[in-house]
Amino acid sequence: MTGGGTGQVACGVKAHGVPGNVVVAVVASLPFLFGAWSAGSASAGIPLFLVGVPLHFAREIAKDLDDADGDAAHRRTLPLRVGPGIARLVVVTSVALFVVALAPFAVRRPAFAIVVLPAVALCLVAARRVLSGQRGTPRLLKSAMVVAMVAFVLSARW
Image (cartoon, rainbow, N blue to C red; front, side):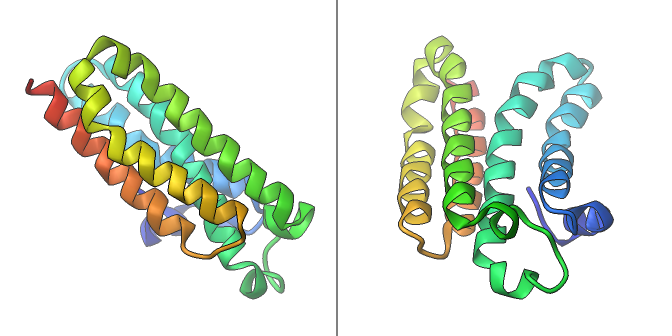
């Protein structure tokens, strides 16, 4: 998950917009690789890492949309560089990539397909909100992350 610590790690790069968003998305998704590595198989974490990066990236851009006024003086975020309309499309595209990345897990484990539906629903609501220019999308995307992680844990036990 992204938090103050992750943002601080990338603060120099983050001031430049998209490169910082990418760094934060990658760093925030690394716990999946570290967890798999500590369990003896780092490569087992790669699919989860690849699922996590697009949702973290979408959340970072959504935060930049919400913070555009405050960022104008000191950051070159995507919404400030290309406008909020294109930044919103980037968020929706990245959320769609997250949902598509979940598909192989859902096909292999029908229980996962069921318990991950709330995360997908949160993503749909977030996409609708961001496209309509409403604030608060990052919170919905963070909730989708948590729900998806819970879905992985719950479905692994069934």
